[in-house]
Length: 382
Image (cartoon, rainbow, N blue to C red; front, side, top):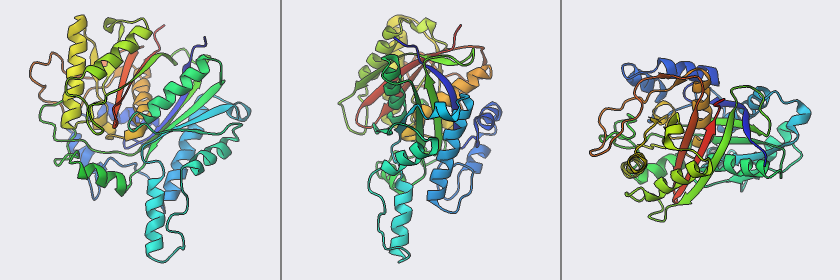
């Protein structure tokens, strides 16, 4: 069975317009200047924004998508001919809703005859297929906040089974009022506008927009490329919009990923938590991680990334994998911002100071509406 490596990546997010800017900002943001960072991000509403200006949502959507895809291919050092062999996997929650909203608004103002111009999301796949002259049709994955990580898992399985040669996985989430108002109606958004995941005083989540891409191949290109060691999926039937407070499904998902990789908790450099910041999700995942550590009497560092870029929903898989892998390649594990007080009877706190490292083995965990749980383990240990 083939091995699978991430040989190239790219990202545009609130942290910066490329991964180098993102890493430098992660280094400089701390608890003392976090409020200023938030102030610079928020406009009319509390939302982590990409700091680029465009004439329309459609221009923004496709310009960023194009830039991210081409930079990931360049990072993997693929020729145009090699890029044509990429199977394309797309993971997102809102897909192109921002464009649909814009189109509908134009129709209401009588500037176009189309109320909605495109039904479905085939246009997105067609755009990337044409961009890289791909030989294959795109695959779209929508499993709520696990969409892009499940895209990675699916592509990984196909490469390991020798069913495809290599893959391009793209995660994207752009601001739109439909998604924002939906989370607002569920009362999941933070009134204070301060992200405090895993903190007992957290008052909700903050959404964010970002776009990222990874290239998956069966051969390593660089010494520090990350290999996908294992992945696991499980489903929590407790509720469509919340997780079981006992955390058992999340616990089981992480355990099975470790078992598949033949690893123990002590073999991990860190565990990247989903950590949305909403009350139910916080409690459930904190409980699951605490049970994991206590059950095996082992611990590892817990890393949380959403205070830097917001909750990017279906794109958080590729976004957070790219960010964490790149910080590690830059010789540090990133600290958790804005954490003050842990839950009672919980034995761990997230990592609160940047930690110097050279290589890492990471368990990433993601949770989505509908009960989707995904754990994936990556390593660039020699």
